[in-house]
Length: 331
Image 1 (tube, rainbow, N blue to C red):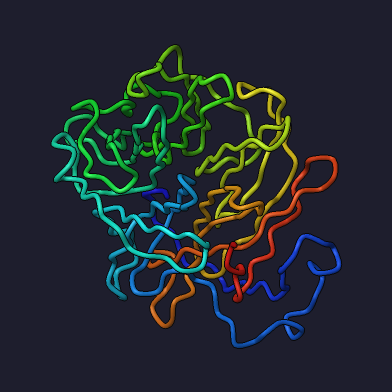
Image 2 (tube, rainbow, N blue to C red):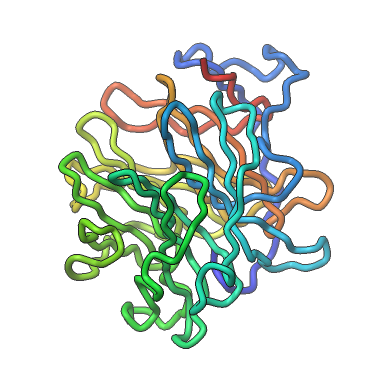
């Protein structure tokens, strides 16, 4: 997300269905599927955005921002993050919430995109907030012994603040943290707006372990997400504005990254596009948000959706097909 004045984009409707791993099934028309199934958005009683997903003990935990903007307010109003869980990717239960000002004494009320990861039995929730004293956005960390809390401030201060990244004049370039733990146990945090940053984390997960680095990515806007499949590392991110999702690939977590193209088109009537990518029970999932809840959904009242993700034989990614039906229950 960006704290800038923007206009609503036109509605883009993806009408192709995607119910299985074969090319034949991917090319089915929507009329050939059961028309009474509406799986997206997956959460409809609240507006949800900026999904991050964590697989733990055969359960998927979904960490999302909570859009609270009233219908006539055309800006982000987010003061907490919500946690949902599911054993099948279809039925979701609301489990807990994390309020900014109740958790981080040094932060103001904005609850922008966040990411949760587990290491050595602890759960670390990297969050985007506004710093009370240092102008601009900042990244903090909450910690818990369980994936749903209770949570406490892991540092008592921000991990990353706006004065640590000075190559752009905007105050919101330190947003959208995404954390990745490599096969050797080393952890890395990626983040940014207009500039893509990464840094290594110390084993305690609450301190940087080395310099802040930049990644040259075409038309990088925000929302980095890193995952690994086989020998390949994938870095997906919000591309241009209104945002599509693009991706790059590398044989190393530290790069160099090779740009591969668009992964997801503009997500309906939402100017932003923020993804999480996971594998669960043998299938790959692309989790994102759009603005599709009638009648007040939009760029500031978004909704999380889930569709399948497919790989080509060479490791590149097939373009995501956004559907109304969503995914089938994972068994």
